Each structure stands twice: as C-alpha cells, then as structure tokens.
Length: 79
Image (cartoon, rainbow, N blue to C red; front, top):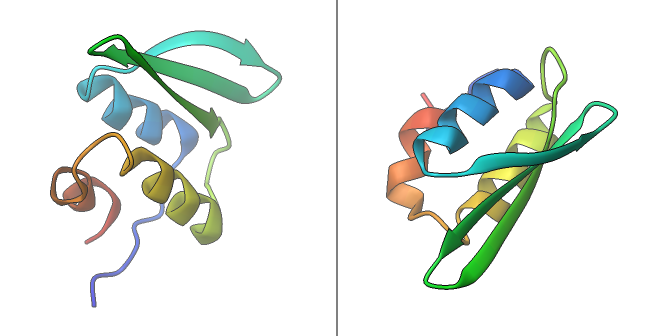
C-alpha cells in the first residue's frame, strides 16, 4: 500500500493550481480555492500549515477526488 506524503499547505496549493483551481479568498490560515467547470463551481479549502496531519491530507485528497480523477491526484499525495 502506498504511503501518504508529508505535505505543507503551500504544496497542496501548488498541486491544485496545476489542476485549474484559483485562490478566491483567505480567512486566517485557510485558503478557499475555486474552479468552474461546465458552469459547475467546485470549491476546496486548504489550511496553510507548515505540515498537515495525515488525516487532514486524506480529507483534502478525498474532497479533491470528487472533482479530479483519483489516478491523477494519487502521484501527488502518495509515494
């Protein structure tokens, strides 16, 4: 089973920017990212912590996989 990488909030932003998400707002350390595809608004929130907990990374991966195919996301999140 592949191992989850240890990523920072800025690493996640870089990954999601590559899939077309754009930052729309920030409140404290949390950034809201939005992508519009076929008139459907897709929203994700990412904390900008220096190192994200494994549970938080899994939750972001699970939420992002609703919008992005899992096979495209997996190389960025797992070793």
